[in-house]
Each structure stands twice: as C-alpha cells, then as structure tokens.
Length: 498
Ligand SMILES: Nc1ncnc2c1ncn2[C@@H]1O[C@H](COP(=O)(O)OP(=O)(O)O)[C@@H](O)[C@H]1O
Ligand SMILES: O=P(O)(O)OC[C@H](O)CO
Image 1 (tube, helix red, strand yellow):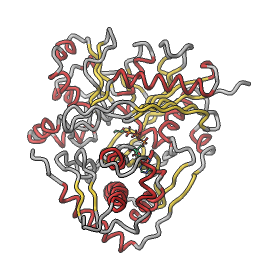
Image 2: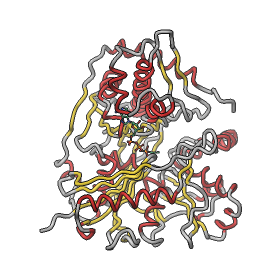
Image 3: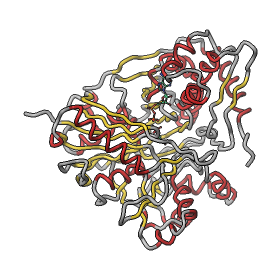
C-alpha cells in the first residue's frame, strides 16, 4: 500500500511552517518562511494577513513538492497557529479590513485600564479564565471596529468576519466555506466562556462586538470540511485546529493531569494540563482550554511570557552582538557567569506572572568589565528566570510540584539555557527527538480525527526523548540568584508613564 501522510500547518509569530509526518510520526519534509513584522508605533505589532496566507500556502506547496508525493497521499491536514492575533475580513471579498493585530500589540492597554477601573477584572476572569490584558483578541477587535472607517457599520450589517489565525487559514483553505475556530483558540479571545464553551453575550456587549462576526466554535480534532483553493489540487480533509501552545502540549504528550511543557519561541509559554476542569489561578496565571477531543474537554493552566527567544533576536539584530541566534551559546559560554549583570527582557511589557504593560527592558549591574558575552549570558539566564517565575506560580496554585518539564521551540537548541533552566528550577528538562512539537500536536489531532492513528497511546509509543538535563547547581546559590533577579524585575516595572 502507498504510504500516507498528515500535513501540519504551523503559522507562528515570525514564520509560517509546514511539516509532513508519516505514520511513525517522523518528519518527512518541512518548509519554513519568515514574513514581515510591522511596528507602526511603539508598542504596536502588526502582520499583513495576506502575507500570512501567502507564506503559509507557499510552504504548504513546497513541503509536498520537496517530499515528492501526491497531494492525494495526504490523509488530512491540521492547522496550528499563533493565538490571539486578530484578523477582520470582508465576508464577500475575503479582503482584510486592517492588518492583523498581533498578540504582542499593546495599543489597547489603556482601554484595559479603564475596564479595570470599572471593576471588571474578576467578572472577566470568572468567565474566561483570563487576566484583563491587551494580549487577548477582544480589545483588538473593538479597536478595529472603532478605528477603521466604516468597519463598525459593516460589522453590524453582518458583512465582516473576525477570526484568529486558525479561522483565517481555514477560511482561505476552504474557499470561504468554513468560518470556524476551535475551543482552544476561542478561549484566548476574552469573549468565550470556558465553562459553557460558548461565546458570551455579556462580554460581547461589553466590548461592543456583533455576534455575527464570530466564527462557529468546533472541537480541536474533527473533520470540519475539505480544502477548496487553487493551491491544493485535490480536496483534503481539514481535521484539526489548535492554538500553537495547546498543540505543543499535546505534541509533547502532556496528556495526563499535571504534566507540563514550556515552549521557548518568540515568547515562552508554560502550560500545565489540569484535566477535565479549569483551575482558577490565585497567582496571575491563565485558565484556558487545552483541547476538545473525542467529546472530552481538557483544560490547562498557562503562564505566557511575552519576550523569550526574541530577546536573543534583539541582541542579534538590534545590538548586533552576533550574527545568528545559535552563536549566543558559545558567546555566553565564553564567560563563567554574567559578572553580576541581570537583564530583564520586558521589551513589550511583562506578561505572567507580573502583567505589567508599562514595564520596559532593563540591564543592571553593568561595570567597566562587562562584555557582550556577559550581556548575552544574562539574556539567556533571563529567559530561564522568567520561566522559573511561572513554574513557581503554578506550584503555588496547584499545590503540585513537578519533577520534570518537557521543552520545545527554537531556543531549546541552546543547551546552556536548558542546563541553567534545570539548575534554577530544580526539575529534569526533557527535550524531545521530534522538536517540532507544535506541528506534531496539530498532526496528532488531525490524524486521530481521520483514523490515521487510533489512540494517543499508539502515538506516544512512537515518540522518544532526545536529551534530558538534570539539576546540578546548589539550590541555595540558585535562590540567591533568584532574589537578585526579582530585584532587577522590580526596577523594570511601571517604567512607561500610564
Ligand atoms: N540556539 C539558540 N539560542 C537561543 N535562542 C535561539 C536559538 N535558536 C533560536 N533561538 C530563538 O528562538 C526563537 C525562534 O523560535 P521559534 O520556535 O521558531 O519561534 P516562533 O514559533 O515564536 O516564531 C527566536 O526568537 C530565536 O532568537
Ligand atoms: O508564534 P509563537 O510560537 O511565538 O506563539 C505565540 C502564542 O500563541 C501567543 O499566545
């Protein structure tokens, strides 16, 4: 019999990726294409939705051509995506009415302050599991309706569609037949009740968003329809939609309650499976939907750190300390320690567990002896400190201390960072052999929907770890370092005037 494949489309913040998996969960081919990041004003981040689609469709075609297979050999495709990023488009023409407002964009921070002053924080948290913050889609949609000429009237006439990037891609792939989003993406909009699993009318009223704009909410793993676009010559079942962090949690086989993963990409996203109910956080973490599979809903606790690997990008492109992100490791390893330097990468404010949109990046402890190597090492350590803050908040929330954490994302290639993370957090860090956990998760959801794989157990038996990092440092020393880090964080906070 001819081999069959599952195609995963992974639409990330900085690049679009397509990955083709065979039935042994091996990567058969892969293609990646970066696209433009637009920063029209300080704190604003936008993407062109047409470029998101053109790069995504380019890599999708490329991956099939590279593998030298027929499109009809693909049993199903799955979509996973940067979450919260907001696209609004015309239902008739499919033309976006504005650029995509990216999850990192802070333009609606002051509007969130107004809502906070009106005492809405708790009500929003109860329903959505989220912290009232500009990160989520609701205030971004409202901004588009209020600021793009004619948009509100068109939305009220039912002419506009809203979607996170999963919806936008499903719309384009299906030739405008599917206006859908899955529960994991819906749970990041701040318009979705994670208990009833439906859009919430009170929140829609609050943000003044017509319900007709919203996509239909579907399970994470199911056949929703087939492709119908010029780029795909045969109809292929579209069989999963999942937020990228939730897909990574699944791809990392964190299927049992209290299993956890961290993805070290542009940001760092720490997620803990909390089983079949949301866990309300007392420590500024998010309760969110992990996935809906086989009629069962699984929830997670999440800490979202806004600047992770992107601080290394900033050292590379902004300060020009090295020419490739991988060079950060030998440079940092060329010194024994940071020489007392702490770098707080609050370049777009601070996310979990601080949620301070007015914080800004800070480097403290610089002396005449400080070199680019010390600063680079401090930046790598900062990523680990940020993750450690969230892991500790999770332990405080759940009363459960994990002994291991699975990791993925571009920056896990950095072994110095991984070892420091193990030392600091005191847990075993497990790096998988299939590093594309996000794409793998999307493929697993899609493969399960079409019977390509029959159970998660069958898939887990196919996957092996690549390397484990065990804690080696003295806990007392790490505690001292943690104190200094918190002192540096304190200095970075509330820097921008409200
Ligand atoms: N060896 C490395 N050391 C540290 N950071 C790295 C390394 N390789 C890549 N990165 C960082 O990882 C990020 C890319 O990770 P990736 O998972 O591809 O991001 P995303 O999915 O958010 O677009 C970049 O910010 C890059 O600077
Ligand atoms: O594109 P990534 O991997 O940085 O992920 C972005 C997150 O989904 C934002 O919440």
